Length: 612
Ligand code: ADP
Image (cartoon, rainbow, N blue to C red):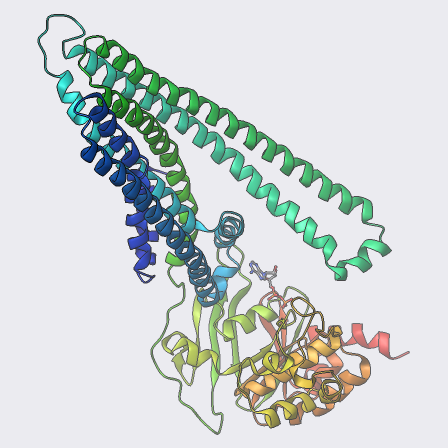
């Protein structure tokens, strides 16, 4: 990443922080100021006291200096610690704030982005940093604070030794030591060591970046296998297929790799710190040498000597801090780039503005006109010149072999994706023109890979904190699960799954499908879409649901995707998909007339297993 890009990442993070507490800036400024000043206060006062002791020995002045030394040192230290505490407390809040920003963007992102490999990569990388490194804001502010503090410490140290420096400039050129040359040599030597520190910091930073990348990816794998063996759902397959050895090997390989990189990381860090310390000593050595040589001429007072030596330690530390922190700031910018990518990715979808008319008669007429579609980043058309009309109030079945594009058809219909070519219209108007949220509210969908959340059952069905209990039970009843729910320890308030609650309810696949069906019913949308909704149901439950299907969806338009063709017979119309196109369309009886047709072949292939 170029220097400019890094600066733009830091500017982006600062911009996002703008809505956050102003206290952060106050604590930041206080911490930098008092952190830099605190060690210098005792140095300066000690020098004054030493000078007074060596000179006038004025008791009153000595007492005042002593009191000031004690009060100001304690005051500075108190303010430094207080601002330290406030600063870190605010950073913790910032960590939460950052998590919320991330969550808000992920939940609000276009669905198709979530399936985009590049985007997924940014999300994964960001999550690792968020979980393992306190988050990007914490690091950025922490490093910035150290950087500014280092700069201030350098500046303050130079300010307090400036009077002594000036004495050195009182050039008489009578000898080399009394000329301006030694001080220039001293400054040049300190600057050169500073440059060496910066170069070493840069080398360390690129090594560290490489190791960190390896550690992050190994850690992700290590974490996956660690959590994998923890999940009791995986326990069945592990035991039945005797996968213990395989899992153990995967886990221990990644664990070994992880520890190897971590050890390497610590080794490199220790070496870097060692070199830094030596260079720091070298800076101090330069100052000591300069002071020793100069003192021979009696240029320095005893106080100046104390001041010079005390400040030189601070200067050496400040240079070391500035050079080592600048690479960390650069790394922090790299980390910010992931969040920047997530936050700044523009919506891919056109967000329309046209309101969707609220109709009690559900007269919503949808048509696919010459629609072609390929998934972003792929070259193959999943749907090609696809045409279909959803008859208002009709119950339509969609059948076809795996991969023929049935689920993609539903994703386009609900605008989880937008078409590549052609258009989909609602009551004659391109669906892209409608307000996206309003348009999406027309659909209740149960996908094959539907998800239930680890919250109360009622919240799973109503997706809300407040709900109509009577309506909830009506939907649970229609989905055939109300009796089971009533018998749960906390009825509809029972928590699903044990992720967060040890009293959580474990449910079977079939029960989960019924809850998902109830959720689709509760939404009460004009279109009900069931994508293989009964695959995990036992035959009796499946039969019950089919029987109730008409009642289930009433006069709504329904789309029903199924592999069990027998269940499509009661639909008004059947669309037969093949290779991304509708190859046949009609009622069961009419389609069965075409003995050479796809539907007849699919039906015959299935029926031979039933009629025996
Ligand atoms: P069906 O529902 O008929 O089984 P799908 O609509 O799920 O078929 O898939 C149709 C084709 O699109 C398949 O070849 C599948 O691999 C591909 N596909 C599905 N989802 C994606 C995706 N997110 N990215 C790329 N290709 C996909």
